[in-house]
Length: 285
Ligand SMILES: Cc1cc2nc3c(=O)[nH]c(=O)nc-3n(C[C@H](O)[C@H](O)[C@H](O)COP(=O)(O)O)c2cc1C
Image (cartoon, rainbow, N blue to C red; front, top):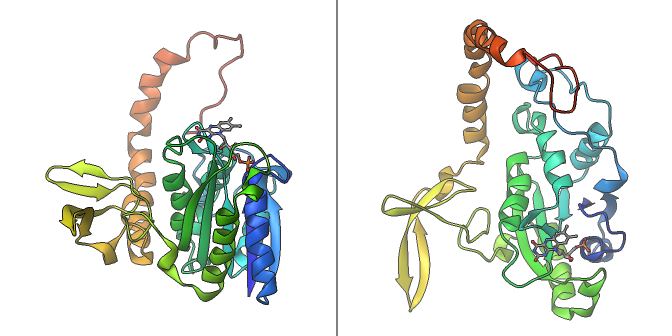
């Protein structure tokens, strides 16, 4: 068993890194091989939206370290990711990596499907976690991972997590769940992503991450949700395949049909220079 730890914070020995290190140390004690990477040590350039990976099924032409990071993810049997909350969301570097990882969502066979993963989100101020747990879950689920444990940890300054014995114990428990593939660690309302974020749609509620619907129920005086289509959530391999084959891949040919009209209408906007005096660049079409 090989466990990869991904740290998505610039802070060396910050809370995210220490959480990952604790999970990996425990996993090592239990016999696993481990490796930790800090995303900020690697070059991760933004996705340019060229869609070549999707429509032409070719390797991403961007020259940076993303392929190397993907290789490490593929080589590991399990993953722990720790990412801090920044302005109610995950730190941007994780999203930068995800945007560059579309190929892992549709390539056959999908290499990361069903691998166990743990998500840890350090945050600084009570009730300021925002949507960071949901975003971290999207990173894992969209790539095919199965979340076995996910939790937020309140810790503000670098290293403060070390003063929180419960949080550190939770990291060690998470290691055990990773190795056993035991999903009972998830705490939130949605049984798939483990988040408590809900949308209200007509008279039902919906998990916006997993696209499952349910009704609010009160059981033993506690509010809960009874979901109806848990097995058919957004991230199942069959639904991801359908999404790409029916919604994403055909959009290329459809776009080419309307492209001449768009080009005509674009002329009006091509005149003049950009604000800062740069010439207009070549468009992606
Ligand atoms: C740019 C920035 C934005 C932040 N935004 C939030 C926030 O919205 N909510 C919150 O609870 N903490 C916020 N924090 C605090 C971090 O989440 C907290 O310090 C965390 O422990 C950092 O983890 P790290 O040591 O792994 O980097 C922010 C920190 C930074 C640097």
